[in-house]
Every structure is written in C-alpha cells, then in structure tokens.
Image (cartoon, rainbow over all chains, first blue to last red; front, side):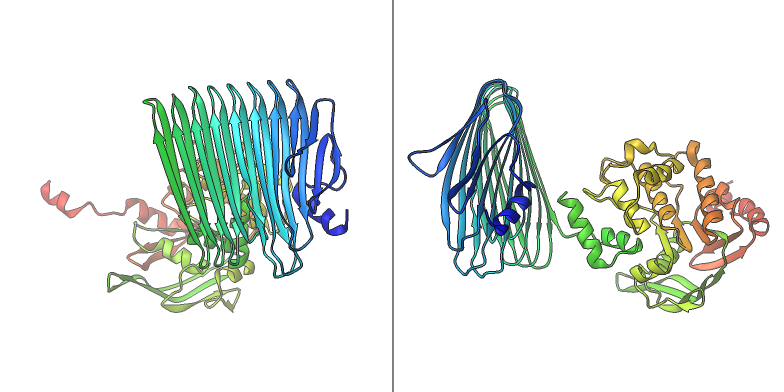
Length: 305
Length: 240
C-alpha cells in the first residue's frame, strides 16, 4: 500500500497500522489485506464484488474493520457487503471510504451494505467518508445501507462526511421488529458546489420498537443538501427524527419529513431546524477575543462534534 | 481607566428616532463601579457601547487614554474589555471547558476549569464537559457567563445584571467572586445591577435615568437617596 492510500486509511479509521481483530482492506478495487478470527469470518462473494461477514452467535467485544481506499483516478466500482450478525452478539463494525483523486476523471465508490442482525444482538456501526486530491476529477460516493433488526436487536449507526466528496446520495432503509431499536447519527459538511442527499426509510414492524434519526449538517458556499426521512409506525412504537442544519453563504438545505402511523399506538415525531449561525453567538465569541471568522469556525466545529 | 465622553445613542423605533442615551460623561478608574437605574434607563445600551456591540451616535470612548470608539468587538476584547451578557447565549456542541478555554485564550486544564466553576457555585465535575445548550438552566448559564470573565482577566469587566436568575441563597458567594476578581486583576469592575447588596460593595455608584446620568458618587453619597427615593405613583396617591 502506498503513502496516499496509507493517508486515506488514517483519515478513515485512525489506522496507522494493521487493525486488531477481523479486517478486510480494499484498495483500488482489489484485496489489500484480510484477517479473520475464530468468531468472525470474511468470505469473498463469487457472483459479484464484495464480501460476506459472518459473526458467530454470542460474539462479544470484537470489532471488524472494512475500509476502502481509492487513489486511482477514474476508478468506478460498486461493492456489495453483507453482514450476518448472530444472536446475542455485541460487536463494532467500522467501515469507510476514502477517495484521493488527483486526475481529471471521476472516481466513484458505491458501497451497498446489508445488515442482518439476529435476536438480541447489539451492533455499533461507524461509517466515514473522506475525499482528497487536487485533480479536477470528481469524487462520488453513494452508500446504500439496508438494515434488518430481529426481535430485541439494536443497531447504532454513526455516519460522517466532513470533507472532499463532490456528490453523495446515501440511502438507508431499515425494518425494525419487536423490541428492537435503531439509532442513526449523521454528520455532514458540504462546501463548494457539493451535493449531499440523505434518504432514510424506516419501517417499525413490532411492538416496543424504536427509531431515532439525528442529522446535523453544515452547508457552506454554494453546496446543496437534502434530508429526507420516511418513518412508518406499524405497531406500538416510538419514532423520532431530527434535522438540524446551519446554512452559510449561498448554500441550500431542504428537510423533507414523512411520518406515517398505521397503528393507534404509533408515536412519531419529526423536528427540523435550518438557519444561519445566530448573530448573538458570533458576538459572544467575539467579546471573548475571537475574530468573526474564528468564531464561525468554533461554532461549526462544536455543532459537528 | 475607561473614559466615556459625550456618549449619545439614538435608535430607530419604527421611523421615529428615540434617544436612549444622552450626553453621557463618565470616568472609571480601577474601581468597583455599579450602574443602576430604572428599566429602560439605558444601562444595557451603555454596556453594549463600551463592548463595541453598539456604535454610539456621538461621543468617544477611551481606554487608558487610547481612543477605541472605532475599534471592533474583537479588538476591544483583545485590548482588555470583557462583557458578561444579561442573557447568556447557548451553543450546541461547545462544552463549558471549550468556552472557558476560548475565554482564557489558551487550552485550560481540567483542574483550572474546576476551580473556576466551584467559585461560581457549580459542582465542577458535573459541568466540565456539559454542552452550553438548552439543557442548562438560566441560572447555570449566568454562572458560566461569570466564570468566562474570571478566565479572561480583562482590565475592564462588565457584568449586565449578573444576579438575574441566581437564587438569593448563593448570591452572597457571587459577591465574593466579584470582590476577588477586583483584588486579583486590579482593574475596573462595572456591574449593572438593581441589587442593594451589590451597590453596597461598590466604590462608585452611577444612577442612570431616562438616558442621562442623574447622579454619580460614592455609595455613601448615593445610597441614602436611592433607598429613600421613588415618589409614590401619583395616580395612586390621588386615589388615597
């Protein structure tokens, strides 16, 4: 792996060297390293690009890293990764994609991740997206995430995109069974002429199921963001989504919630707030000695923390 | 030393100019000064003009002999003017420790943050990493606002009604905070207040009314008048 790929890897996962536990590193469309453990198996798909990650029931405290790095300008790929998490597991999955494009051709990565989380299993899923390189070629990422939570299972997903991705359309769908819970925390910052679209569709199928979608974003310069959330409550369940965005310069942000209750005890809430940085926040930090620009940076940094 | 020379401020009230401050002349040496007066007398406007948040329509402001009238909020902060807001501002994601570090102009150690918070009556351990968001009460925010000025160590520290929202029970401790700041920094502490207990520790009291300085002097000179002052409402006395 070369220096650029190392740098991408470090940005994505804070990885300086080979991670502990199970991992699968994909670099420029090929396998660059893999490790399996007694409880976590990784198998290359035969019919298309991608891997199956199988985690044995009862596996606790283990982690899986599956970073993807692209440094070859013009490379475009779609990768299908399926996660099968056994009953009563408690695991962390860290995925991410870094694109370094110093050429003039578009580089693109579409990761299609499916999670099948069995009864009472607990998953923390972290996904990071990062782009770099000074070429005119665009860096595109279109992650698709499909989540199935069985009875009593829970999944907490953190997704972060702070820098360098020209266009992204992230689609997440989930079905949540009885007593299962899904939390998704999304952080996005766009600048230049970037476009970021988020699309959540969640169906709560069982009693006592819950979902909480939290999006915090900052749109600067002429970038555009669209946040769409569709939550259906088909049982006695709790659904909550919130979109909190700071808009700057000539950017544009849309929040489009859709709540559907198909059951008398479905309890669904959506909150959305979009606005520029409050003048009084800037003034307060300026009275503490920061310039207006420094104050803005602090506010944005805190907001996305 | 802070000098205000002929400060006037007019505001636009739906196309009509109204005078908020008229020809204020005030010299503040390194003392403990309390500004008091009825609601709407121009106290907060005066504080905002000193901090650079509002620009006076007329007049000059001098800090240690240097004219700072045209200086920005940031420049004044760097020159040594600190301002604790009457209504503290909330920030999502910025923690108490972050804001005290910004105020101090350097990364502060947890132990330093703890000692500042304890002085303003907050149990430090619970607050260091709390975000300054809607989860904090008004009284908690006011205390953090005071701690920010402790961290800044400004030559001139202005507090706009620091007592508002703080329970009387812990108020006495806060008075000690102001006294200690005054001792340590040896600068000017300017407190806008209606609280007799604050006025009682001031070296100088300024009484504002209707945008003018009605009276200024030592507390011995001003306090007796203030306490006995206030003619009963004429409508009421007519009824009696």
